[in-house]
Length: 240
Image 1 (cartoon, rainbow, N blue to C red):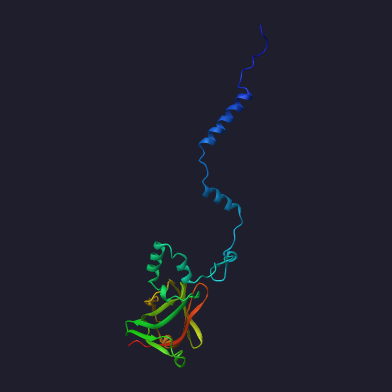
Image 2 (cartoon, rainbow, N blue to C red; image 1 turned 120 degrees about the vertical axis):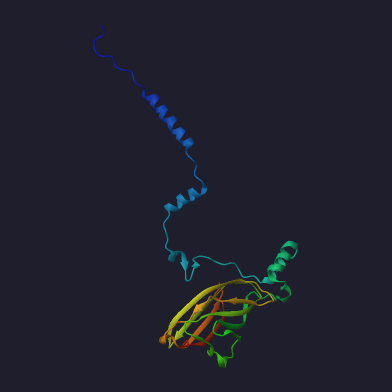
């Protein structure tokens, strides 16, 4: 007869380890593998975050960005003269101005006229450039609370002008009272002039709003070339 209690048999440690290993293998098989984008995002989380001021310089210029060398449009066209499909595509894009190109690399924007469109009087157009003796003269007179738009006619020559923008700054009695900015776009040389109408604006109302204003209209491209700077004046009168 055996004295004492018989020890209950239990699973051995070796069996437990084998089962845990199998469970881990099953988990690894069922886990969805990381995509490339997920791996990149995981790496980005570990990197330091930079402020926009560290990444950009000036007005939206990316730090460290170095644009390629400027190549004349004539040279760009001649590079693909043996490729008929590319040549036809470029002719369609440029409006067959290859004969007008002289190899000049710098694009040139020539403004022909500036117009004012308003419900008060329809449209008034002034040829450009304005005579130096008339620079700053009153281009138009508007009623208070009236809506108006500036309309421009211009040609692009020699090369593609990229990111053509405008800024219109207005002063009254020597104090700046308004400034508007906008993007016109990117334009290729063509024989027909471009016609572009700026965004609609509304003149202020009230006794303090009436009077004579001076303004400066400026056009620049991505490379900060100034293609036109026009000083002009306009007047706001009482609405009857």
